[in-house]
Amino acid sequence: MIERLRNLVRPLRVRWGRRVFYKIEELELASTIRERRLARDNHLTNDQLAPLSIIVKVKNEPEFLEAWLEYHGKLVGLDNILILDNESDSEKHLNLLKRYSDKAYVVRLPGFYDNFHYPHLYPQPYQWAASRSRYVTFLDIDEFLVARAGDCLSGKNLFSQLAHPETKAFAGIWLWNKEPLAAESLAVSDPVVFTAPDPGLLGYGTVAGKSIVRADALTEAKVVGHNLQNESMLPLFNDKSFGEIFVLHLSQLNPALMRKRSRQHLQAVGLLPAELDEESALKAISNALEAGEFTERSGPWRYATQFVTGRIIEPRREYFGEGPFATTAVNEFFTGFEVPELAEIVESFDFRQLLETEKNKFTQD
Image (cartoon, rainbow, N blue to C red; front, side, top):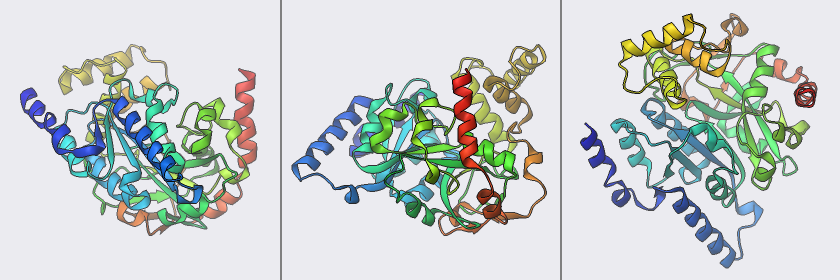
């Protein structure tokens, strides 16, 4: 099996072409060459830059990869997408990457994947993005970017929302699917159910959702990821930053897929040996939970519980209420779908007070 994977990966440098980089320094060189070429050609004006480029991190994600790339490729263009592949070894995943490698950019990148969000640790992806677009965001493979117009969420609404050059950052608000996905793999036509969040969930989604940062503010941001969980991000937000851009977070998954993704995280942080079979891994984590080895509500506790139960821990299901709800699919995210009562809830929410509350948490600490 190992030799088969080696044979699959070995020819990638030759067959995948100029948009696959096996060292992060190769991406840095490509960005430098691009910048010099633009300078030679009198550089691009701000109006000629792409509105947005997207960085996404992946590791063995064949269940989401194709649907995610099909949607965001339509949204921003595949040539404005950079895939940071954290040394995947799934043959199905690698074959999917190969299919898109002449259009999107791919870097095979070792290290702990949560550290990729820090421009000072990994400057090259952000240099690449800043050389081609006005705004930059960093998403996970289960997150889909849309914007609001009234009760309608749509990819088509996004770029009118980004047309505020004085705004250094926008808060992409997490909106979770209400029901677990039925299948272990996401197809663009699979039904996905959403409902307007209550104010508590809207606040949580605003704090924990994903930022869209103006390219010239990346050094100020220090970390590109969750909106209000990072002190360096807070001064970048203004009144236009909130309430219009959403990140559809497909976090409620089929139980088998939930276990797989939770196990990957536990392995990445060194809490679960990769060589254990499924039964042994479940037993080891169940015993650790019963023994109180994880701090309750911590990240490791959450992933451990999700691995054992096959169900997401947050957001709590009671936050969703009973409806009304909208059933849609990934292939409708771009053209748009209605979420009943969303506008009423968003427009009555005090985002300015939420921002002040989060700022106060850092000053108190």
